[in-house]
Image (cartoon, rainbow, N blue to C red; front, top):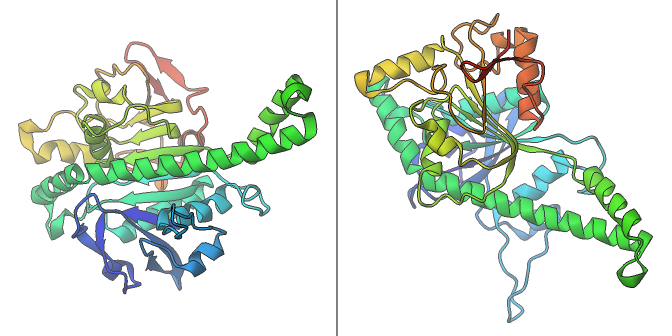
Length: 373
C-alpha cells in the first residue's frame, strides 16, 4: 500500500513509529512525501520514497525521463512512480498485465489517528470492499496530549494541512489526466487502424469502437472517503482561496461521520465536484461526535454527521444510519460490528466503488434524507 503525507519523515527508518513523526514536515506543512507500506510478520514496514526516484525505480515501472531544451534528462518524481504502481493494480490490462483490477479509494482520516492506525484501517477497507486505498495522513496525533487539548491541537493541524491537501489533490488530478491522455491516444490509434481516419473514416463505427474500448481499457472508478475530522480539513480547503472549483477528480465523495458544523454546510458542500454522488452519512447516536460537541462547550455547534436537521445542500445525498441493527453508537460504521448488517455493508460497497448507493433506500422528504430502514 502507498501512503501520502505532510508529516515529518525519517527516510532511514523502516518502522512506522520511527519513520513518521507526529508533527508537520520541517520544510513546511505543505510539503508532501510518499511511502510504501507492507506487512511483514504481522507488523507494518515502510519505505519512505525519495522525492526524485532512482534509475532503477524508473526502469521498474517503465518510466523514461523527459529531456529539456539542452537535451538534459529531467528528474522523475516519486508521484509518477507511485501512479504507475497503483495503475498496475487498478487497471492491470492497461499496464500490460492480466487480472480484473479494482477501483481506487482516496482516504482522508480524522482526529487522533497515528499512521499505524491509518494503515490498519486502510487495509480493512481494501479487504472488505475490494478497493485499492491511497491514504492521505496529516499530523492528527493530538500532539501527545489527550482530551480537549488534543482535540484543539488536531483542529489546528487540520487547518495547517489545507495547503498540503490541495497539493495532493492537484497532483492526483495531473496523474489521472496523464493516464487519461495516454489511454485516449492508445484507443484512438486502435480506432484509426481499424476504421480509418480523415476522409476515409467510418465515423459511426469509429465512435462505437472508441466508446467500447474506452470502457474496456479504463474500467476503474476513483472515489474519496473523508472520515470524521477529515471533513473539517476538506471544508476549509473548499472555503479557502486556493481551492479550484473546476477540479473533477472523483466519481463519489463519501463524507462519513463529519466532525464539522452542520450550520452553513451547504455553502461549501455545493462546491464539491464529482461525476456521480456526494454522500453525507449520519448517525444521531454517534458517541464520538456527541463527545466532540461537548469538548468545546457552547462554541461547538451541532455536528454535520449526527444532526438530522437543516440538510439543505442542493447536491448532497444524506443517508441516516441511526437505529440500524449493529450500528449503535459507532463513529466508524463502515467497519467492524456494523457490517453484520448487510444493508450497511451494501451501501458502503457501492459508495466506495463509485456506484449509486441509495437505490432501494427509503427517502424521507420532510428531512431530505434516506434511511436504511
